[in-house]
Image 1 (cartoon, rainbow, N blue to C red):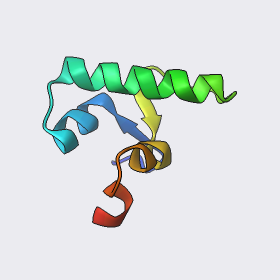
Image 2: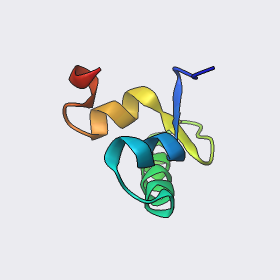
Image 3: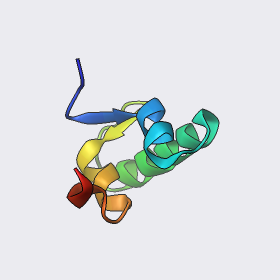
Length: 62
């Protein structure tokens, strides 16, 4: 079952065509940005909404 609230590093790797280690680095970076704004984060996952906002055009592609 696909979780609509969060995107995993594996999904990021697949969507962007990058390696999983690089995808984990991107997820970590986005989570650090969210933590700086006061949000609670989960390692290896990032808010789907934030992910789609960060990568211009992702929200319109779906």
